[in-house]
Amino acid sequence: MPSAFAHARRLGKGEGRMRAQLFVLIVALAWGTAASSSAQSDRDREKERCDRDCLIGISEQYLDALAAKDPKKAPLAGSNIRNTENGQRLLIGDGLWNSITARGTYKLHVADPTSGQIVTFTTMRENGTPLILAVRLRVEKQRITAVETIVARSEGGAKNLETMGKPREAFERETPPNERMTRPDLVRTANMYFSGMQLNDGKGKYPFADDCNRIENGAPTTNAPTNGKPRPDPKTATGYSAMWSCREQFESGLIHFVSRIRDRRYVAVDHERGLVVAFAFFDHDAGPSRSFKTPDGRPVVGGPVQPWTWMIAELFKVEGGQLHEIEAILERVPYGMPSGWSSWEEGMSDKIQFPIK
Image (cartoon, one colour):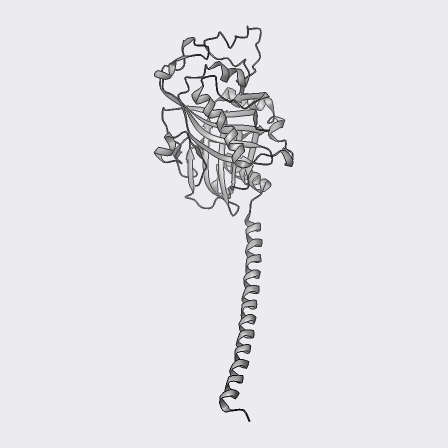
């Protein structure tokens, strides 16, 4: 007859098995609940995610609200979201909201669902006068959480863009999936443009495709028509020409008077289309940078005689590791002006930056 101790030990083993089974059941239930919760979270995130069409729709709503002078018509996350206009922080409803009277007919959207950012180049009317805007929106949960606007009050430039009618085809064309560069490589290639221009010794590695073409405020600044005028020779000219190709301008070494390209913030990347938008500043120090030598050693003096800065939004079409179409919106601002989004150190830096706000 088994002892009482042995009987108790058998009971203990049975209870241990029961406890183990109960533990497994509890873990399974908890795992199932967690998996269900995770699946629900994924569905919620997908519902809140803003794809390309969503971002474009939100930008359109914002611009319509701006033209109507009614912030309530824009999908804003709140009344005190961060908002700047040419570097100056303003409340939504102030600044352009007082003077804009209508939308224009030109628009170019660069949507970046990965970062939740969209940049729109567009024309509008300010008390009836055409102007150009570059508007960056940051979108979270399908609501606008930040607005950055560059205003180029160039009536002629706005009219030029509207005469074009629509953006160049390359900006809408998708890059074949097997030919797409990584996001970092797209940005690095675009940044070679700024670095090459800032150094501008004519000897750099310039990733320009043969079909590279640039317009600024609606006007061609490369491959411009001669209109019967003689085309300057890049090897003997003392100033660069809009008649030259992208590569000829850089290899001439005649853009040396751009003394610094700083606060290079890469604010939107459309990976499918190979598009990169940067907001940056081009400084002209009007000092030492005016005197330089061309690649063949010819001494040249040129460039602005007063310190000032271009505030610029620049769009690059990047494919196959090369720069193709380039489009810029720019406005002259005080020398050394900040963007309102970077620290002073970041604003003076020529390093690659990404928006985190």
